[in-house]
Image (cartoon, rainbow, N blue to C red):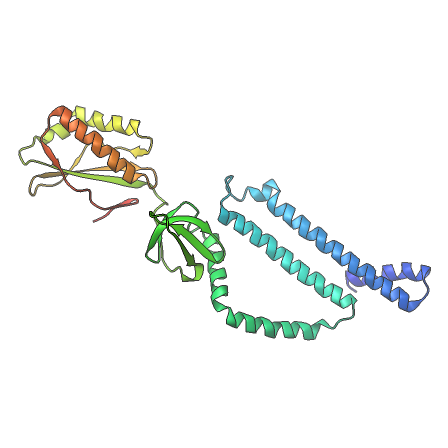
Length: 291
């Protein structure tokens, strides 16, 4: 005998002592059991919400500064627990009302299959969203390239991802359509500066103490610089002497560092009265030097 049957028997014994009428007793027992299951549903859903959203032990599973996708996971877990339990409570209430639930479940299965067949894209988006959030492939604030669209992630949902490009356009992509993600915000970036000097330039001027101190001091003055090189690299001797300076920067800060360092480099060369000419900056990407 199940727990509900035992409880039902106890309630029936109590009521029948007060009201001997069998039919009234059965009605009151059914009402009491329905009230009992409603109270249980309320308490369990409230308890699960408290455990997921309030307790420190569960919250420590996430970062202190919770992002939208992490909050989405919490809401998803809470909704799944609530949906499963309420479905079970509904079955118990229908049982108390004398409703045969077997045909209903069979009919619901057929209906669910029909709905699922017509909502394949929606299901694909939801499943892809779960994996996207669970695998932590991207997070809000990352600069990414998805399906040839580049921009900063502004929102991650179970169905869609939104990113904003440099023009301020907001691009919405269904999770099920995401195949390849290029995340440029996982590692430090590199600012790459190229410049060319005349063939008769004395390269020792770029390998001396003064230039090393110039590089070191620039690294101290710019908070976005992670690591400065000790000197410039001679990368080509065709049509002049081409040098490259690679500066490790904070994530997505390389463009600003490139622009700022060029100004400081020109000022340094002018101060030292060096003869040189600057070339165009080569393409750079996060963590790598492009071609």
